[in-house]
Amino acid sequence: MQTIYLDNAATSFPKAPGVPEAMSHYLMDVGGNPGRGSYAPVTQAELKTLTLREKLCAFFQSSDPEACIFTGGATAGLNLVLKGILQPGDHVLVSAMEHNAVMRPLHQLSGVQIEKVPCDAEGVMSAEALITRIRPETRMVCLTHASNVCGTLLPVEAVGEECHARGIPFVVDAAQTAGHVPVSLERFHASALVLPAHKGLLGPQGVGAVLMREAFAHRVLPLITGGTGSRSDQETQPEELPDKFEAGTQNTPGIYGFLAAMEYVAPRLNEICAQTMWLTERFLAGVISLPHTRLLGKATLEGRVPVISLDFTDQDNAMVADRLAREFGIFTRCGLHCAPSAHRTLGSFPQGSVRFSIGAFNTQEEIDRTLEALRIILTDRKSFAQF
Image: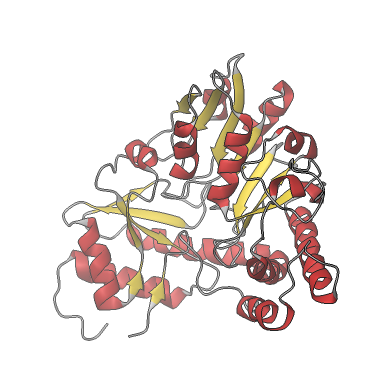
């Protein structure tokens, strides 16, 4: 059976051309551990690491390569900046659409006041609704750039501008937008931009980055401390960037794969965006005629990314997702997507939804086949030999 992969919001597949080869090259031919020696393979790995920092900063419009920190992914990056800044008594503003990668670290922080800014039934949040909730004790605003459930974009530029004017750190979770739409630390007035390699950027799992403004980075306490290959005469963590945040051995195979992915995505961002949004438009147009189907979020292309969730009103969502996979080879994601607050906002809690997330390598034929499979399942036709 020919399969169709529509779970790119969880992780992209396939990866960008060159990613497996780059990772294999490091493992088979290089092997040196950056910062742990001065022989040729080490310096080669260090150069690749520096090249990736510079490429990320150019792509995401940051002027501080030393404050581009490699992490194990977006969740690790969010933990770093949230736990490295917030203290008991601090007030932090988030949206009602946040992922548990934001909410669970915040709930771990004793004494931190968490306030959710309401969003409407399409996942839309107004900047004014957040701005009016800023207090004297507000020490951070943290927003997802786009919902991982329904793809709705949040007004990060307007919020960032206000945070910048008031001197409040602004953290943007770009997990669902990096590699899909233009993302800019500078334009968002962000203090930190958190992103994974493995979603829209088409890189491997287990590696990501936090791009910070240098002044903000010096305020953040490191989450993990240890050996850095620098200042080895001292038992205290160095303050120099990026060493301050990169204790221990980094995921160097992942860094090689991340760099290969960036070299593929960076010159093609506009092309990828146009293609995935055209397919999204085609999918949304087809959803209108599906029986017993409720679309979560926006029905138009404006203000969204290619993440689409459907709630099936006369069949169990998990059964629909299972039939799509088992009978048609169509892979989606069913459930609450680690974002219970978003589902409450969208009216899909506790049943969740079936999420269809379109990636750089999906095709028109795949979208049309998926819509036809849904029609078959939803009309309960048992014979699909001609599909």
